[in-house]
Image 1 (tube, rainbow, N blue to C red):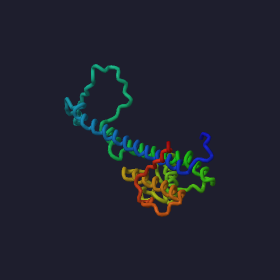
Image 2: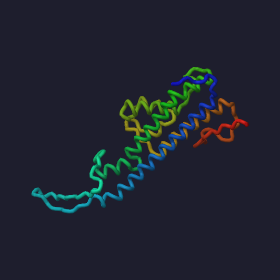
Image 3: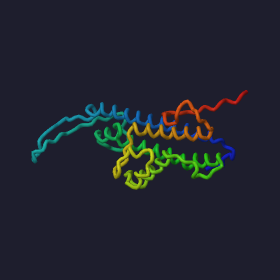
Image 4: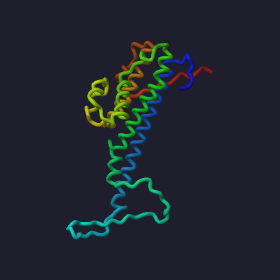
Length: 227
């Protein structure tokens, strides 16, 4: 971590993290759109690109279907990155499929790691307090999910599940973590709500026009310096 200004403002650091969270929301949504686009394109091409041209019964009485694939003769030097069944490709790119799960897990790990390694220490420094005094239930839950994903093959065991404070209802004990689209957006909202709580407490605002728990999205605009 680089050297930071000692008098860094608490609300500036919170604002930076909220901006970071909003960027992760955008990346997550763009990735899902990409998976969906791949799914639609391949689904439309399955029967056009690969079609049966011959069918017969072998000596064992099993029906054998011979398929022909059609390649572009003007592109003879294509190097294959991988060969995968169309059905497996569609499954991976389907809603809630393995690609969506991987991007979800990557975003959650990124959210927690940036908080713990960068944002939390700067918040503590700006307030002049010890690190442990900067607390967040949702970030604690993301720490548990990170450990589960990286060190427990994505399976959340009872001892870890019972420590969840905000997300226990999302996951099943002794089952692989599966993060739905709705769950991701709930997690994004919970992170922003905790940022709002910390900010309002720092500013000593007791009569805000909206409660932090009602927030689903947040951005903070800094006033421009007068000319």
